[in-house]
Image 1: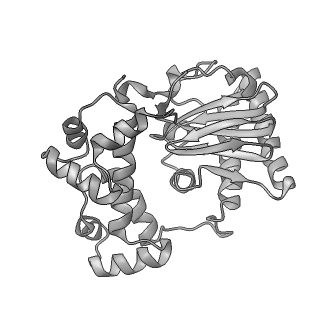
Image 2: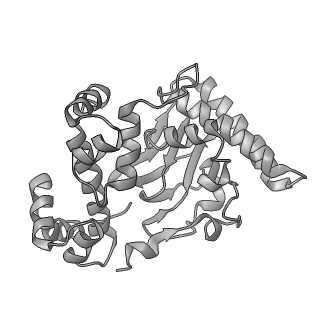
Length: 291
């Protein structure tokens, strides 16, 4: 089995058409029916899949989805995924990373942080909203194909507009653009950055210059889950990815996730999943495992 680090594909080395590290790639879904990487893998970039027709199967981390019309998948950096697409499928795939946008611009940094927490799939009940997003993708595809003068600026502007539409549909965008993030939002961003090494609520509370009790109240009210639960949930998801898709030993996985003692890592994992890391890995091997 390959090391999970070897399954982490960068934007400049992925896809049918190559782009630079700071580029934005727009392709038609049919060119990806035969996957560029034919096994479960991770990206270090965002991948948006806009389906206009057709069907198939898509698995992101450990959740399976049936692909259908008027559906958009949003894969974030670090997620493990794979798909099996029907030949009749059509739509667009848009790929980009943080370097693709002007992250020094507050508005675009805001969009990147918000899209990180969108659901993996959006099902559009209002077809007119889906159509408006597809129209943006169509124009982006034409710009990407023609590569006329200043096309990179056009692509970046269209991408920002598309992200706003996705965030609105995901019901986490306010009409008046926020000038600051709430503490619960900042907490989620900090967890994404530090979950491998920092498992204590106190660490995040100190970063946000507030008491652990106040952070717990605000996060629980915002997300319906305690800070401690969210930290552990993120940690366990990464542990499951390593166990399913890497050849690392249990001790090595624990070390990658900040545990010097393999036994403590095993106890921590069993505490939350009611199964040891070794048994979890064996169970996955007894059935088809895709991501």
